[in-house]
Image (cartoon, rainbow, N blue to C red; front, side, top):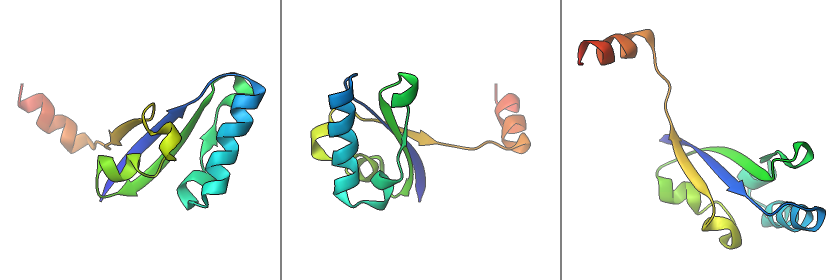
Length: 90
């Protein structure tokens, strides 16, 4: 399984935040109901980290209304050994 960060921006403003948050919470999806939000700090974005099989599966977690603007990034961790290998291959 791969790990993905799903970033879902939405319009600024109280009403836009309410609509977006409600859509996430009403979806019933465990992933969406546990999203992290930046709205109170002026960053009108939700972030979700999911462990799924593919980028498409990660994007499909997002409600259809917000999928087009969602950004999906595969996450990777690196070890000191990984770094040594990368440095040795240059």
